[in-house]
Length: 359
Ligand code: 6MZ
Image 1: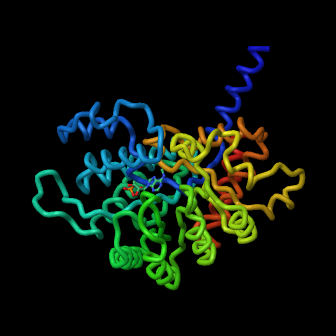
Image 2 (image 1 turned 60 degrees about the vertical axis):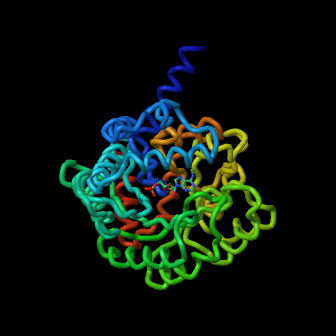
Image 3 (image 1 turned 45 degrees about the vertical axis):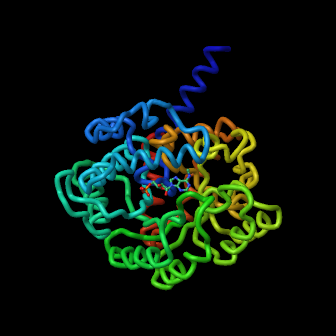
């Protein structure tokens, strides 16, 4: 009996690893390798223990934001940003991710520790793209497709900063920037301040994803975001009954990050995670097509110590999905990407081919 169940666990671990996956909600700095963070902290003279690098994972959302502050204190140059982008691409590839939209909040950083002047936001985006290009040139065979989303930080940015980030995204639209995100400490900032910039981004063809319902007591904001009708929502942990009904009707896909929500105390347990509100097993795939597209994502794989394969493992284990259901869940995510329809088809084909290859 024990042998049989050990075999089952090993089979599931192997399955989630080789399952071709799409990652749509990953913050670049939050996805930093722990080893890289420790190395950069030592080089910057930051005390790892005091900086909480020794603690395995945060316990609340506010602790997660403390960790981001530490990461930003360690990741201080454009060279570091390029390294993070390169390492994240390698890690996604190793984990069986075939396509990813990485998001990051542009910051003015110097080229090196010795440099006197902070760089421009354009240089920040260039550094991320250099990291992606380095991965592309090194990797042989099938490569993960990578696109970039620029984030507006609701706690730190003003309305005019948001406009500047939209302009930045538009300058890089032909080089892989596909959309905009609104993130940052959800207890701070007002949606109304950022809506005009995001409306303008949309008019120029950028797609929009919004962190929403990450904390309690923001029902009016959620209602206003629903009226905006973004291309995707992130999280949606705390949604009132009327908003939930609107969300389901809207057809807007949602990015769901189980471990992040659990460790941030945004869900009391995995079993009660709101994935269960949006996904139900149905025998007919046609029926499932009418339900919300759930994009299983990591959020901050470095901070929460959980790669995408592990998130799929948790979903399968907690909600009793079989391999076919997990494959359909992963493949449905394709409908929610910010890719153009022709690029959609090639990624879809890549996922099918990968599944066939491993049969
Ligand atoms: C809201 C989050 C987040 O942009 O410097 N970020 N914002 N909720 C979350 N849930 C846990 N996780 C990450 O990556 C780090 C930044 O992403 C946002 C925060 O603004 C954080 O500072 P970048 O690459």
